[in-house]
Length: 163
Image (cartoon, rainbow, N blue to C red):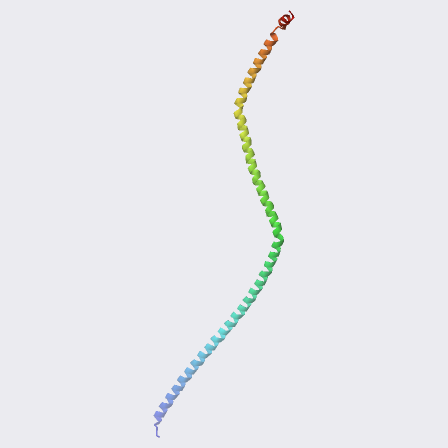
């Protein structure tokens, strides 16, 4: 097999170009693989960080629920001790409000009654004056009649009785 040196050289260059091309592809694939591994590593770290944060959040939620439950129990306990006192104060306040309302209503009624009484007295004033005038006239007539009776001479009657 006789192959010309130029053809062999050309084949060697072509093979060398192919090897260089394959080396570049290999380097590109290694670079891509390295980038993928880096991304995977970053994603794993982000996932682990997120899981850690999720666990912390769950622990905080659990602690907050326990605290809330404890505070709710405290509130229920305090409310059960304060409720009767609050109910008594509320009832006392309602009683006072009712008394105040009744006092206001009574005050209004008293004011109306006093006003009505004064109005009645004012309207009776003319009648009282008229009655007083009539009484004074009657007293004058009685005085006149009394004077007439006193002026009657009882001697004349005595003499008639004696005769």
